[in-house]
Image 1 (cartoon, rainbow, N blue to C red):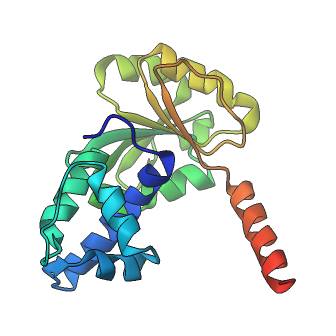
Image 2 (tube, rainbow, N blue to C red):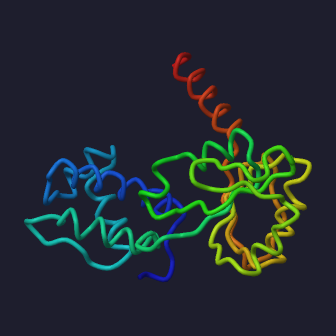
Amino acid sequence: MAGYVSEAVIRRLPGYYRHLKELESEGVMQISSQGMGERMKLTASQIRQDINCFGGFGRQGYGYNVTELREHIGRILGIDRMHRMIIMGAGNIGRAVALSDSFPANGFQVIALFDTDPQKFGSTIGSSPVKDLESIEAFLAVQSVDIAVLAVPTATAQAVANRLWDNGIRAIWNFAPVDLKHPRETTVVNVHLEEGLEILSFKMKHKNNA
């Protein structure tokens, strides 16, 4: 794989993977960069440039084998194996993540949720148990966890994240509306829901005023 890949290309990779899965389910066996570009509203040149970031793939006059390219991008994304996740917070967002059908289908398995509400302890959401947040250190001492989903209130997000990092978690999917201070070796992806709505509002306003 090439040494440097832009953030824009990385953000497009899940879209490639999703479209290729859809093509497989439709029985499509091969697709050109032109055809892929039409599906994704990108130019054929952009498709080729993105995929070539990770080595030559596809054949002149043939295009791409859909299954091979989907598997190739799956390996690039690291979703050719199962990732074990825990969810910090069993409220609305935590429940939504735990109950999603798409995560297991794409290699992400929720193994437990943690909360501070005693009434939730011992219950299950989907197939995952809800545990006392105070047991997180003991849990991580014996369980292999790849990703933690942070779905806790803003006031406690940094403290919970610190406990996770202190106990070996190196990847966090953060739904709390706060920019976390984190160690250099840790990866954090933020999902700020209100920012998404604000961007949508901006685009609606300026499209209407065009």
